[in-house]
Image (cartoon, rainbow, N blue to C red; front, top):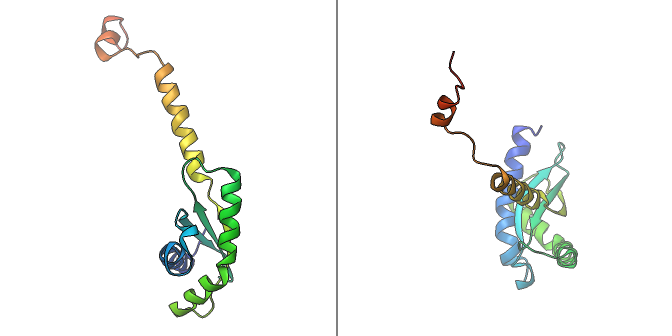
Length: 133
C-alpha cells in the first residue's frame, strides 16, 4: 500500500507527465498516448508510467509507442527536475491493460443481461405464493 508521500508524488508526476508527453517534450507522434497512472516505488527511486492508446490499438502500435516514450525519457526527466523534488524517479513505461480488462467485463455483463430471461416482478412473485407464509 502506498504511503501518503508516494501517493502525493504519484499524483504530481501524473499531472506533469500528462502535460508534458503530448505537448512540450514530445512531437505530434505522442499525441495519441494517454497517461493513465503512475506508480512509484517506496523509496521513490523509480516510477512506472502507465499509458493507453486508442481503443483498438494493435500490438505494433503499442510497441511503437513504447519506443517513442523511451526516446523522450531523458528530456521528460529533465523537465520533471524543475518540480523541486530531491530526486526525480527513474521512469519506465508500460501499456495499461486495466482499461481493456474493464471493457471485457462490461461486454460480458451486457451479454449476460441480454441472455437472462426476465425475472418475476413483485406482482408475479405474490401470485405464485412466493414470500407468503
